[in-house]
Length: 247
Image (tube, rainbow, N blue to C red; front, side, top):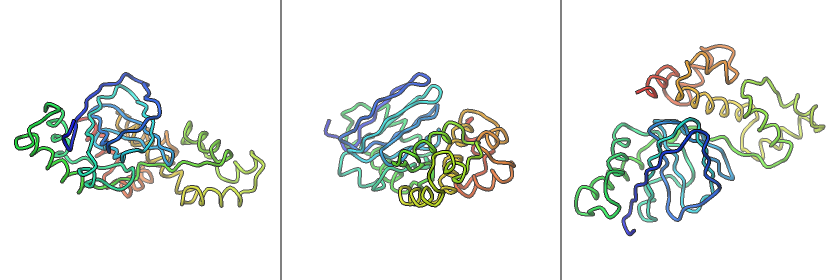
């Protein structure tokens, strides 16, 4: 098709995966229900309802679902894609952008550029351009020792595993692993683990888990510490986020 924006809808079953692939157009991935997990070569992303993932054209990625997912995507032609960020990013979805996405999905593929479809497309570009980015991406690591550490913590975010513990287990010095972690992710191990825990907590909240249980599940010793970290990262409290996901 030759329109600047193309809408696509698909519903996924629980624990469904889409193998590694690319698109010729930039993609805005959004779900009205369920949680999507998208992995690129550079990072992994948790995308609950109320959030969307911007994936530039040509970026290889895999998609997996947590629960049943109702996906609503918008594909942007190169000229329209200038509205989005230069790299992969999680975007906050305003109530207006949500309704615009749903309205665009109800339009025919060859929508009227001078009519309603054209107005929707212009508004979608404006809302994407002003959408806030959110820290729901967890940088990937390449070193085999760090990959095993990352996998262990992704499987069990609450595990009280320090870089010193892992150094002793894998036979490398803590200094070496710390240097590798910062070089490959651009951040400290502590900051990386906090991002992982907050992303996993966001997924739990979206699935209806109570904030206190979500905090414990990802390793926060107190609900207040979790609440402070969550609000600093996302601008809302875990309770507000949970109520927003239930609507």
